[in-house]
Image (cartoon, rainbow, N blue to C red):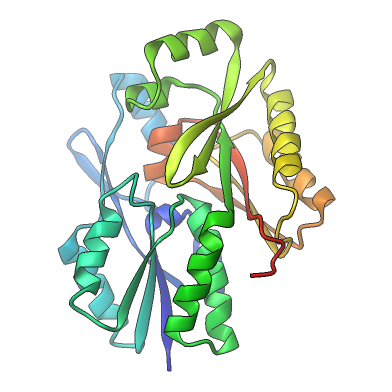
Length: 282
């Protein structure tokens, strides 16, 4: 039986990683004024330039039911089953749109990742490895769902402007962060973006403190794979995060750039380390 692993472009995996694990994607849309782009097919610095110029965030559009139907039907020409791991249902209509299509096709299985970005990517890679092990679709869905609560997805943001413009941060919190030079941590938990630690001072030292705190709090990682995901962070920030994961003992460390949908919410120079915190025992 041939099984395909699928996700939306919000999985934030490079073409090389998608090819390595045979993960297929369908794209969100990004609207910059009167121009529409496919998420993943644009340089996200265009988003930051657009916000600087207009003072407004771009609009993002989830994959709709018709697009999912086309995507799944195309995959089913070459595969017997499709397992689709979707962006958190709390953050987007994507999961519900995909679920409605799957209800009409017994060969499509849709999972709510309860996560975003390479938090989804971690689950998709795990599912891909299960396919290689010869698990059937029902077994893979069950095993992936068991790992969802253990996905550690967090970031430290350089600015609260984007979260404020998107209604996820109050004006008072934004002003306080600016005055105190705070760089807050955002933690994805229970399908929601929640405030975490608050770091003060130079950006590089804030990123180091964030990494130390995260690896201390989530001290039972599956060391097979970890991610450093960023929205055009500096080389020094990226290298620092990579070294922290290396010191912890991660065997594979992927560095990925957040796509348009995620970058539209987090802004420039946001960076995070992501891994599954279950010791690799599920």
